[in-house]
Image (cartoon, rainbow, N blue to C red):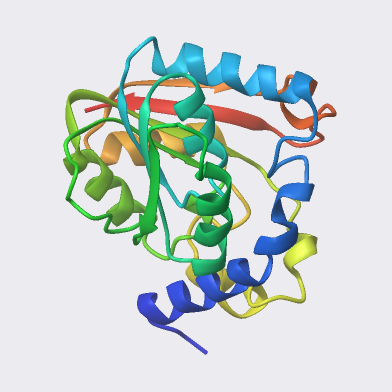
Length: 222
C-alpha cells in the first residue's frame, strides 16, 4: 500500500513518540557517560566553530544536539513532529540556563521564523523522510549565505525495525537504512550546497563502543 507523505510523517512521529520514554538509554541516542559527553562536545565544537551561532536542530528528538550546542554557547532551536520526544527535550532544558528552545516543526518544511540560521544540523533523521531532497532544499533556504548544513548519518542495522511501521513504508523512504556518505554529498550538492566534506565518526567514545557500521558527518555550505 502506498501512503502519501503526510501519512508517512504521522506514522513516523507516532512511532518515535512511543519510544520517547526510553529513547535516551541507547548509546546512539543519549549520553551514557562523561567520556561520551566530552567527545560530542569536542566534535560539535570543531564542526560549528566558536560562535555564538544560531542553530536549527532538525528532528531534534529528546534534544541531544540542541542541548550540546547550548552547552557550547550557541543559541539552538530544536524542532520535531513527535510530541512525546519534544516533551522529554523540554523537561531536560528546564532550569538549565541554556539558550535552547523546542517547538513542533516538520523536518521537510521547517518554520521560517528565526531564519536565517548560521547552522542547520540533524542526526539520524534524513533516512526517515519521505522527501529528503525537498527537505535539503528547504534547509538551504533557511541558512544565511555561507551558512553550514551538518548531516550526522551512517549505515544502520535495520532489522530492529523489521516488525514496526517501517516494514510498511520503507519502500517510500529514499534513504531508508542510511546511504553511503558520497550519496549524501551528491544530495547536498543537488540542493545547491557547496564546499561539501565528509568526516568519519568512528571514534568509540562517541558511541561508547566502536561502531560496526560506518558513521560519518557530511557538511556543506550555502
